[in-house]
Every structure is written in structure tokens, then in C-alpha cells.
Image (cartoon, rainbow, N blue to C red; front, side, top):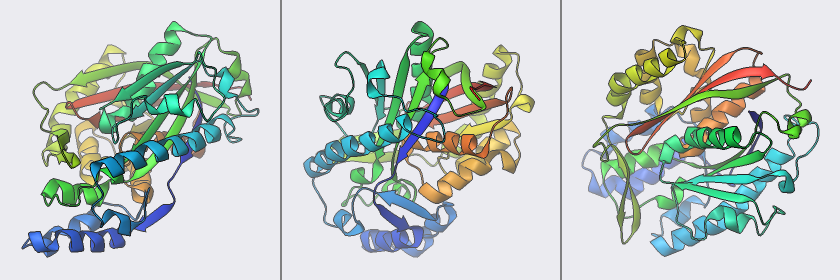
Amino acid sequence: MILSIGKCLPPYCLEQKEAASFAKKQFGQHFKDIERLLPVFESAGIDTRYFAMPLEWYSTGPTFEEKNERYITLAVEYAKKAVEDCLQNPFYLNEAVSCEDVDAIFFVSTTGISTPSIEARLMNVLPFSSHTKRIPIWGLGCAGGASGIARAHDYCLAHPEEAVLVINVELCSLTFQHGDFSKSNLIGTALFADGTSSVLMIGDQSPIKERTNMNSLPKVIATRSTLMKDSEGVMGWEVSNEGLHVVFSKSIPSIVANWLEPNVLQFLSSLNKSTDEIDYFIAHPGGTKVLTAYEEALNFSHAMTSVSREVLRQYGNMSSVTVIYVLDQFLRNGCNEEDIGLMAALGPGFCSELVLLKWEKGGT
């Protein structure tokens, strides 16, 4: 059961037209048709994005070492703020939850490297018990938001009296490749952004449920993970001495249209559900074309993706974090008891993560 959500945005807000100007300077000399390519910034459906560093910093060509050092320092800083927001959030909770009440941390990220992993470093700046279990998850990209919820649900089934945190930190901008003039890097520059989220989840027997401020709470009913074989080239990283280079296939919307539909329908059918019974579609907004492909594949109206489109417009694609912001917005809009929600996210592998949610009686 999902009890609370916390968020943290980095300090530098960039309008999309500023990002387009930056890209023109970075890529202009290497694309004869740069003016034909720049409209991707306008068609991305994004107004603003948030970044960990000021725009001029990305023009200096920082090394992989410099970028990763920033990732470690800032991931701990932002995760701390998101956790505090989650555990003390008056919208969700009538009484704060202490770090000592958290039995396990699932830390999800794909945009930097750290050993010990970030949640270990976080435990040195927040008063978690030294016995808190740590489950770092790396490499799921945009699918990591839904996957983190699914794996935390599995944990709560095994430990119904416990409480866990799912922390997502993605600093996509720190992977920007100053000297990479590929179209994938240009598209990534138009879409990706930075953000952090924290989700408090509890088992059915957790006493912390009494602290909810919500009339109804989303409970995970079922999950499904699916891997498309031999599809490593669809999405992911290529690693070089300069760092992480984005792989972003133009075939993603067509894959959504052709591959996701039977996957979703089989998942719902196994639960004796149909798409007609879905009240909320909590979709990771990978881009406007992906959201349109979702609508066409699942026969959903444009209204079903309106919240995802709004999150994309305000924040861009924050990789695994984005779907958590979408869920947060649904909860803030108000959801009714007995309603059904389908969370969906796609990521490297190529893979999909599906989570079926049902709203149950809260504590007020």
C-alpha cells in the first residue's frame, strides 16, 4: 500500500526555448539540417525542465569523473530532501514517520555510478537504523519507477508489518555528452531532465497506516515484468571513456503500438480485468509520441493521458522519477475508493513494468 510521496527538484529551471538555443550552439556546426531538427524541442510537449547545474556548466565539457562526482554528492542531497518531504508530508500524513520506522530502502537510479550505493551514503545523513535493509536497483532507466513500486510490493508481501521507502534519483543532465553529435544525443537533450522522488509503502499489517491523511489509499494488486528478447539496442547506455551515451531508438513508439497492447491485455485478462475497467492510467511520459502510442494501442481517450502529459510539460522526462510524479498528481487530484489504476513504464532491456492498483479505504 502506498502511504506517502515526497519530491525534490534541483535548483535550475530551464525553459524549453532556452534548451533549443543551447542545442543549436552545441550541434549546429555538425548538422547541415539543424534548423529542420530543432522543432523536436517544440513538439516534445515540454515547457520547463529542472537541472542539477546551470546551463553554462554543460558547455564546458566536464569529464566523466567530474560528472559522476556531482552525481554522488547531489544524489545524496536530493534524496535526503525527498525522503524528508515523504516522511513529513502533511498532505499524505497526519503524523510524521521517523526514519527509524523504515525497515528497508529500495534505491533506484540509472544516471550515475556509486559504490557504496547512494542509500548507504544517505543512511549517514539521516537517522535510519543501522539495520535497515538496502536494495539498490540500477539500470532499469525509465522503467525503474514502476519496477521499484513492484519490487517493494513483493517485499511488503513477505513482511506485512514493515514499512519501506522507494527512492528514485535521476540526474539525466549529468550524462550529457558535450562532444557527442549523434541524433540520439540531440533527442535526449530535448527530452530529459533531473528529479528525485521518495515513496513510503507499507504492508497490510503495518501500524503506520493509522497515520494516513487520505480517505482512500492505492494498494498494489498485481505486477508484471516483461522483457523483449534481443532488444538491447532499443534504449540504454553505450559506455565510453567520456561516460554514458544515450541510446534512443526512433522505433520506440511503434514498439509501444505493436508490442505493449498484447502484454497489457494478457496481464489484465489474467486478473479478469479489461481496459474498460481502468479509471486511471498512470503512464510514464517517455514523450508525446509514446503517450499517443499508448492511447492507440490500448484504445484510451486523450483524457486518460492528460495527467502524464501535464507532468511531461512541467518537468520533462526525468527517467524513473517521472511516473512517481504522475502518481502523486493523481493522488492530489483525488481518487475514489474501489477505483482501479494501471501504472505503466518502459525501459532498457527492452522491457515493460505494469502495476495494477486499487484504491481502498484510508484512515479518515
